[in-house]
Length: 175
Image (cartoon, rainbow, N blue to C red; front, side):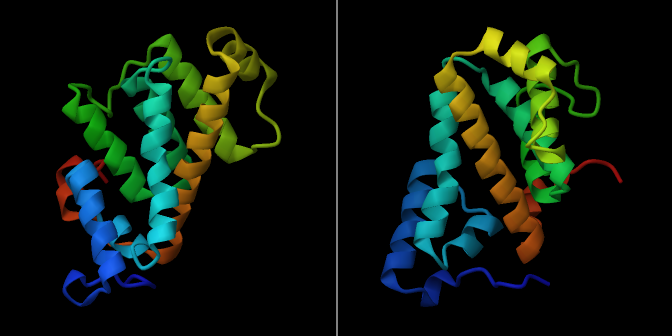
């Protein structure tokens, strides 16, 4: 049972309904996490900056590598909702997340994401060296910031015990 209920659109104040409607307009869907975050439109807006950072990264990092990065972070944190969100993205792109062949960039970002969660104060020097060869400083800043929002998202889902979205069920990892 979630510790914080999702908003009830029918009874929500106007400013919350406006934030809800804007999210639907921008992204076309409303997840259970977003329905919970919308108790604070400011918190929702901050978490939604994940999408802004993703767009900033796309010229330098392709969508698949971003998905692998975020899935790795989510797996390390143990957030079933976040893991399944990225499993769905990979499946919809034609990949099999259970037999994913990692390209060099995928492997680097997978390792970086896992290292961030395991011990953010001690990222292995070989990972940093490979990242610095591959990416400019702006991209590195955006990657670390995206990781921070991804960690916050996973922690929010875990701490609040946000209900698992029914639309994600077909994409969940086999038990």
